[in-house]
Image (cartoon, rainbow, N blue to C red; front, side):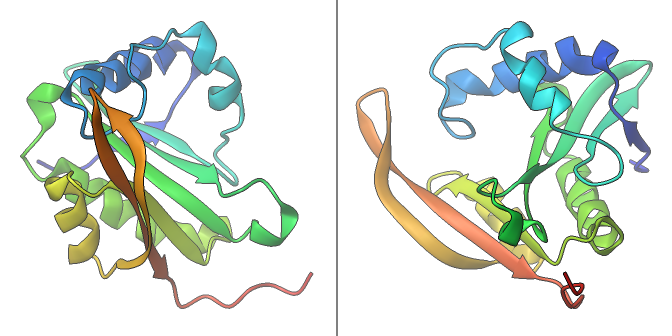
Length: 171
């Protein structure tokens, strides 16, 4: 599958939310326990923009099948060169290398977005995502043990990080 992505528009938000909600039942990807609404994701959507914190979508046959977001880390100015990357795939698009292509594109784009550190927040039991980030040289920078309770099971949240070669710009 050849990767072609574009910046998301507000018209894409229902499809983005649908893909996100499709991951809720698995208890592997998100700490949300119930599906979210499009309205509840408006503020999150508006926090993204092509110049600093893009939100990309991948389409196939005119339908959004995947998305990737760059999100602020911790919301303080000193962390402006650090971004969390999240990747979500439609169920039919999983296991075909699309996540790998999206993560590669994100790492390549990051320096041009003035991002020098990329983070992934992954449940420790989400082995496919752990393998994906590890294969790109992300290291475990921290583990928050048993911070999430999913269907009565306590789960770890693993912070994966990768420092890129770019040096911080002078403030």
